[in-house]
Length: 112
Image 1: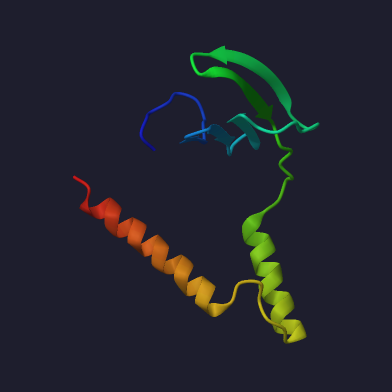
Image 2 (image 1 turned 90 degrees about the vertical axis):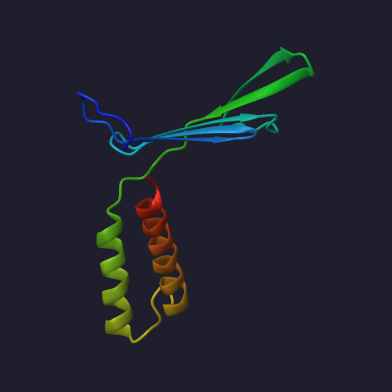
């Protein structure tokens, strides 16, 4: 966390060249604002005039289904053991994910 707040807040904002993504982990809401998005019936769009011409802005609020990721992972692992089947995440993908996590931790430790 980069800020101190008096209220409970778990938010992440991602900025891209042509989009803004706001994620509220506490209230389980997401807002996606994109520039020049093709017509989609599930999003609100409007046009704006800019120095480089007319642009279309699209705003979407995808529905986030309530779930417990840790419980789902444990259930998938249990099912794989009981049925003698492969887990959804293979060993190599699991290793790669852990490697990325350790790289991030190493970067955090080296930042003053």
